[in-house]
Image 1 (cartoon, rainbow, N blue to C red):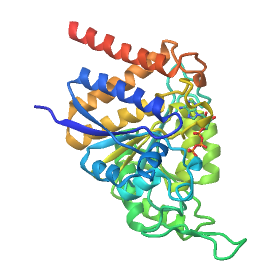
Image 2 (image 1 turned 60 degrees about the vertical axis):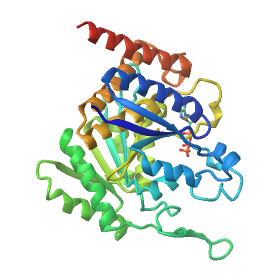
Image 3 (image 1 turned 90 degrees about the vertical axis):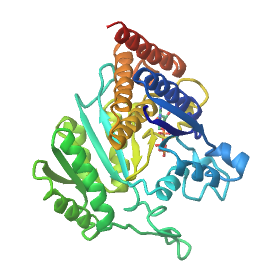
Image 4 (image 1 turned 60 degrees about the horizontal axis):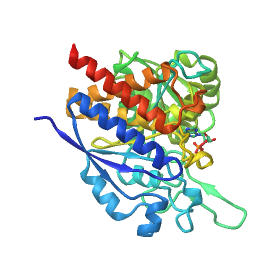
Length: 364
Ligand code: ATP
């Protein structure tokens, strides 16, 4: 009897209520095709939760998430929340901090049909997710950003050996399972103690991975290398803020922000989350690209496969990846990729690709 996975569904704001249901529908079809059972658990979050529960991340949502195998998180538009929620840590930061989702894994891969400006890139950015220079989430209590007097603002950056080591090990393991190359990104010539420690600890961890080739770059130089020769990179490990910025760049040059997926993982749970934001400028029009959210769902399935040694759920991940690639390759895509399909038309085309493929498999 195969495992039944219980996965949370948090639509979020902006285009979230369009792209999250699309990703769930496609994940359901792929799970069925692979013989995997999934129980979906919808939970309130974001602007809708402020309306119903008076807070963007209700306690009940956190309690239920703690019992699940993982979840799909839509984007949030926290700048539009009323105070005090607008100034508080945003919902994804809250969940990353609460569940110690320390590794934010963000692949950037060009696929046929998308208009990649960087050739055939296939890289993964592993971003440390719990500390670094994001002062709104790098403290146990309170925040590392404050204003002691009017006209003066101070933000604290925190790098620790323990947090760097755990994320470095995720990155080295990933590099080992891919092309065996790892790039450390830092700014150790200026932020000598903080990002210098990040580089040092990554280099120490490298001693345990003699089969992985390691190099390192300053963050500013890295943006240039990424634009010029993204194809040369395999796995990139970096601190929180550098990783956030670099992964948006990598996502955009490998196709579109609308195609850049991610998961946020701890040692025992994971959250699928598109790398882009809530795109309020196009919300409610059925034109958003759901690919990033769909592929984030595939990454969660892949992570569950590795976590549980379950080849069926790993196969469901591959079914999603292949169906999305085949759909875009066949000329069906949303307008950010140069096509004309709506979100729902694209979703239907991917489902059709999964169903046609599993019918073909059944016949063989
Ligand atoms: P955040 O700070 O929350 O990450 P952001 O300010 O980086 O958000 P996004 O919401 O990601 O901004 O939007 C940036 C641009 O990319 C907008 O023009 C938006 O319409 C576009 N965009 C983002 N996601 C998608 C998508 N899935 N499909 C199509 N366009 C998108």
